Image (spheres, rainbow, N blue to C red):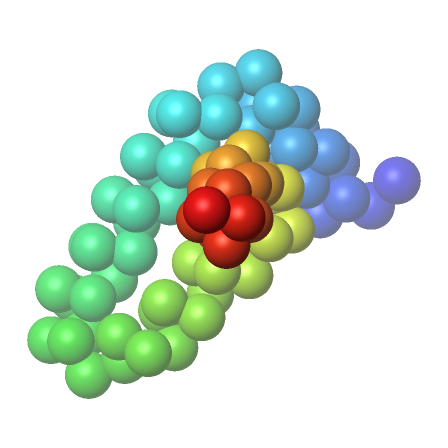
Amino acid sequence: MSEFGDLEKKAQDYVEEHPDQADKGISEAAGFAERETDHQHDQQIDSAVSAAEKHFGQNQDQNQQGSQDDQNQQGN
């Protein structure tokens, strides 16, 4: 396995074991990057956050809950 692949596996394991901490870390890193770039690249940073969350499966429970709420509202 390549060095990057090993790091990716470790990150995936961490996200699975500590999803709240991983989400907090992603948010803090994004905030730091936005401040350091004087908010000139916020759109790109937000895209990177979304890609990271999608890759690691973050927010799946929230998205599934949102879909269920939408279906419940449509049924009423």
